[in-house]
Image (tube, rainbow, N blue to C red):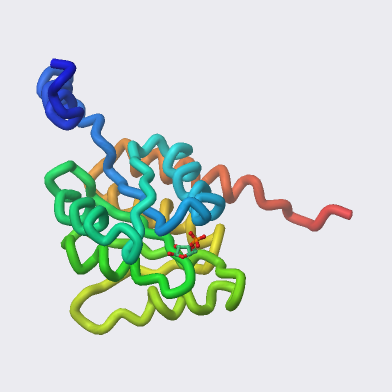
Length: 180
Ligand code: RP5
């Protein structure tokens, strides 16, 4: 059993328990340097108890890794991919080219152009291969996770309830009046 790939063991676990414990969201980023931003996406997925995986996958430094990742994503049980990248940020678009799964792009704030380069690289996909583009930086990473949750919640009542609770708590946390 030890020699078997993890996915095979997880398939067995799924058959025994009836629950699929495999990651439902794939969070990929072009570089280790993107983690400071993308960790806000994984923290949000964690808060909503959504199984995810996080990987460094570069469109230009590890192109074969990206192709393998995206081409196998459906069969590995993923439902949504969140892709964060900065600068000439072609990771989300190239990922979307390899899979029909919804790809949510997070423009990471770059040093030179404050993330405007990342934003325009990700958002301006030609018609035919969509990428859902979020805001630059931390807000985009959080919202990518929340949007992934909304997509998954369409077919998952338990997750829908958790998302409703998360939103209600957020609403309750907003003050009536500003504090001095
Ligand atoms: C992109 O280049 C990455 O997504 C990252 O945002 C940017 C800079 O990468 P490093 O030079 O920090 O590895 O591919």
